[in-house]
Picture 1 (cartoon, helix red, strand yellow):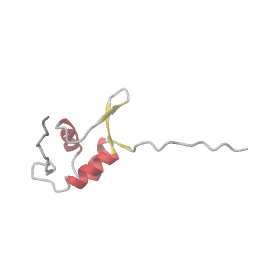
Picture 2 (cartoon, rainbow, N blue to C red):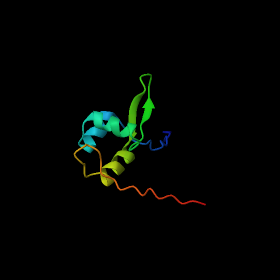
Picture 3 (cartoon, rainbow, N blue to C red):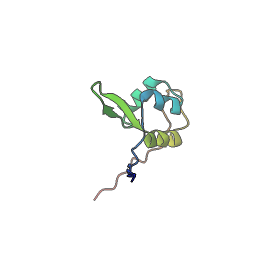
Length: 84
């Protein structure tokens, strides 16, 4: 009798190169955006390579699709915070 193994869907992790290709920017631009906090990187392996969630890259592409001359996405951020 065959056993069916149920696999959980793992989040799709992208390399710096994969993320850069989807965003149509240079790999260094993706690294810079990660350093600026525009996208979160996960460090994996002994070399601590960066990996990005596909959903985060797609969100950045959706909301920051228009790039300015500085190779930085143009994103409107509401900086107002609620205070108690």
